Amino acid sequence: MSAVLMDGKALARDIRAAVKEKCLTMKTPPTLAVVLVGDDPASAIYVRHKAADCAECGIRCLDYTLGGDTTEQRLLSLVDELNERADVDAILVQLPLPPQIRENVVLERIDPRKDADGFHPDNVGRMLQFAPRFLPCTSAGILALLRRYEIDPDGKHCVVIGRSNIVGKPTAVLMLQAHATVTICHTHTADLAAQCRQADILISAAGRAGLVRADMVKEGAVVIDVAMNRGEDGRLCGDAEPAVAEKASFLTPVPGGVGPMTRAMLMENTLRGALLRRGAAE
Ligand code: GUN
Image (cartoon, rainbow, N blue to C red; front, top):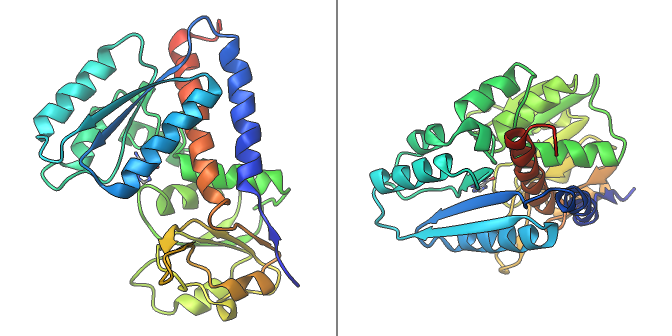
């Protein structure tokens, strides 16, 4: 058996088209402020992609690039300014931040009603109570992809590899909300392979090429590969080795699976921020 490759690129395109249609009905375009601190090359690429997505959707994108030696105070002042501005609907501070800046302090400073990433503790708490305001983009993208392929997590055993605040934890919570039985694995998990073999839906966000081997995948399982690794040959690859495609029923390719969905959900969150701020009138 060879897995159906889940086309995140195509679904992301549909989502952007729907966002664009809604944006066209609004008096002023939704506005997303993207803040990049330092010159991490991967972050610079993400930010460039985000600007292109915004242009396609009719979202105004304000880019702020600050030097790698920026102080926490300076970044907090910028966040305060963006929080205050009536023409800014959504704010994203690109992670990781340089070591002199405390990530949690910055994320808490963002107005939770403009929190495009859904990383503010207020929004994390709401998500945990299954009453979300903004959902973290990657996790929301995974759920949207499962819906598109009519894969219902209800009653399934879902194993998530990774416990980051950005992907692992929120994805586990959303799968729980979707009525899956959830196991979270991480670097201290005793027997990762044995845990993975239990999975009807295996979601890997470890960031280690080859971590998920075919012998760790149950025949017919759905495998969602969230990672973006550079292989030894310099090409992009996920956590799953290629042979996983012969065991899984569905598999997200890397690139072209979860990555485009993360960016599409950011567009949705920006639109949501604009609608929240303007009331249901528009
Ligand atoms: N860095 C890697 N992924 C993300 C993300 O989803 N949001 C932000 N702000 N930074 C990231």
